[in-house]
Image (cartoon, rainbow, N blue to C red; front, side):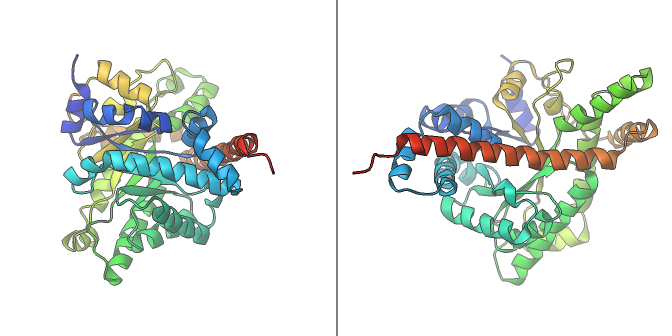
Length: 372
């Protein structure tokens, strides 16, 4: 078997698993992925936890104990999810230590219902960091307009952040600015900048899903020729923006004070259209100092037949810009697409959270001890 995952790691791409469940922790599967498939981090989100907890494997005893204590369903979810993140963080701790804190990270997201409330998001980030109580945790904050000042404040408190739900280049630049502002706040407060880490999760496949749908609606040969190009182009231009920001004088001053670069993270890398190569959002986005967080199916596909041929982003910016410009000429508004995707992203996570509330409440009621 070709070791495509090792080659990917050698090119400077950190491989993170976009999934977590208690069964994955207790069965030894997560440890195995770290040991054998070069996995050096884990990301979670409300959808992942909803699937894991509603699946039930390994949660019954904890839910029964929480039911006996008569906790609220929100508190139960927090206890369950932070327990999983804590245990996963402990499994990944050797990676964290070996990489000086760069990898070996586990992400947990703030309640998505707070996505448009800055103050509540910061309060939730502080609470999650305290509950998990592991240095290799990343608190996920969505890159909504209300999320930007929350990112600055949370970083300014010395809490490491995974910024999620980034779709547009303009918003990504605002995210990097929020990170630098947070580091400047932390520095003013006299905090050591070296333990503060961050990734910026730039979503990939959803961009193609939305734009391809619009291209299919146009239906011309010119439109069909652009199918499957927008997401990779968008991500490559994001990397160009990353290179610009993290070579600036503003950044240099922070780096001299011990700060770490905020790495671009390619999220939503599972291919949704069967017409496309199932590893395209991995093989087409290889560049140093990036993260690719993959569903297990994408991880396995990359290991099996992914062709890693070095850096596939350098030298592509002109073509990437041309691909996005061609969409505008066909009447597909980039600004509209990315706003639709952000709104849908928040709504999907809220819906998953609400499903998680309902299914956990049902389990609490089922396992609650009878009175008397």
